Length: 234
Ligand SMILES: Nc1ncnc2c1ncn2[C@@H]1O[C@H](COP(=O)(O)OP(=O)(O)O)[C@@H](O)[C@H]1O
Ligand SMILES: [Mg+2]
Image (cartoon, rainbow, N blue to C red; front, side, top):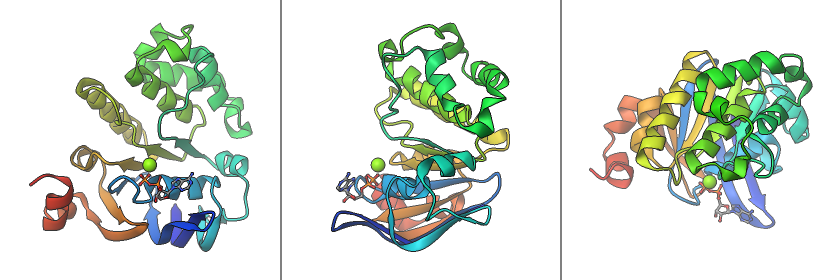
């Protein structure tokens, strides 16, 4: 469904990713793993059109994304839940969610999408009038994921959804993402928490210094000595 071929991107003159080739199939859950600074967020930003490619190509359902502005990429059904959640703190839960369905593809179905998000996240339903900035980190993460769902995404990209969460909230977040995946949404999951990520995805890529150094099924990666030593503490 989405294919990155030999994608490179940089910030100014500093290269951030260098020749990344990855793909996610229809309805698949794929991980993008690696240490801090490996280029995971930049890869998602390249897909979303937030950083320009210096070389390579990205296609989504056969459409070339390289020349499209971010809002057109969103319109194709790619939702990006960014690192650090980035909810609007001065707006209510409900208002934050409504913003997620701003794109034409989602607007007409706003009411049914809200029902869906509130059924997946009852905690958000209880707090729909609360200002987002007054909620806990875990609740804000649910809100950020919920806002992504409001787009009715074909592909949901999550950037370190468990970062900074207490273990219990981390578990809840992974359960919810699994539930969303079961509904048929393709997932591209960025995580530093490799052991947890491998419980959710079917396949993953490991990035290091802007390059894919390993890829394979969950079982292959979990059994790989290099992955065990570097990421699983085995
Ligand atoms: N806004 C930015 N300006 C300059 N360099 C950046 C910026 N964001 C990330 N980088 C650099 O790009 C590289 C990849 O970063 P990033 O994609 O954020 O990694 P990850 O998400 O895997 O931690 C790192 O060397 C990082 O320092
Ligand atoms: Mg990152």
